[in-house]
Length: 216
Image (tube, rainbow, N blue to C red; front, side, top):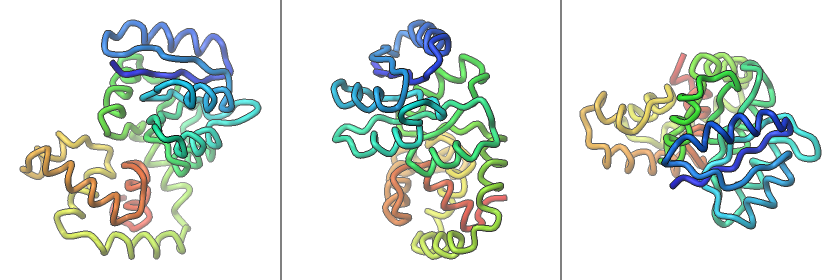
């Protein structure tokens, strides 16, 4: 069972997401929080696998909460939920360590799919919005680009192939098919890539790839 916490200051949104999660036999709704501070408190007291995190909230927003969750001994995965696809807050929550983001009007089946994918170690980004968002905030980021290219150069050619596909939001299984590799080999490559790039998850690796100019 995937233990999920819903974090949103809107009670109706929490109710809707809770009802959606309850309909999936592989998911257990473990907790609900009305803001980031309560989310950190609950995650510290309970075993949480995945957090559906609103970005804009009172007391503590989703950005600060995500950073705090990363410091916990058992760090839950975080999927940021936002109303707007071009939003500085979304970029910041990804940079803080979120494992993906979705728009709140995403199809319910895709939200459930995202929970399963992220729990299994993949990333989940709203594809078109992710490209626009990252391009917007990285187009002129020259210092970051130089540093990113230096880190990418630590990778082997095969690892760069894996990183390029990872940056497109593909799963390990999809990368394995496209590169004619075993999925276990892809997982090993991803682990080495995260270490070489000095990042904590696939989303941050994707940001580094885009900074380095590996994707359009």
